[in-house]
Length: 139
Image (cartoon, rainbow, N blue to C red; front, side, top):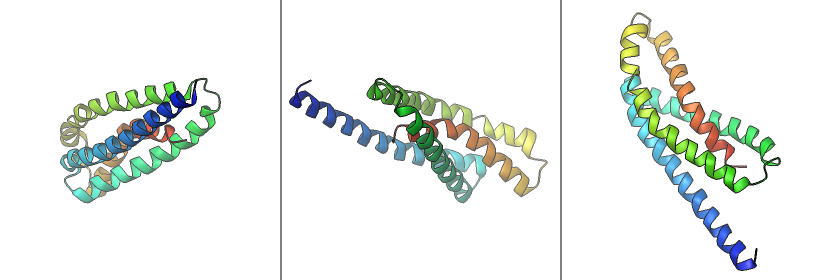
């Protein structure tokens, strides 16, 4: 590969990383708005998203950093992880749409804090998949 092609590839990857970060911030905003309906409060929704992002980015960075050295084509792996994040992110609203009925059926008899912790953990499980993949693309 010539110097010009390598430079073009570097710019293309840099643009993809920039767009990925922009999409990540957009997902954060969309998920926070959706989670207000689950939690009934912006504070609990934002807290859950921040925990999911920080935990997912940390886990993904740790695992991704260890796996990255063994990959034959890191750019291809990066691309597939970004595709997986996008596909999963399109499914999240449908999963979150199930939460109000889950709240009524299972969490309504609980007190405020047990119900809030249960909601937090249920949402965290859903959001850890894409945020871990996002973290794995950082190393």
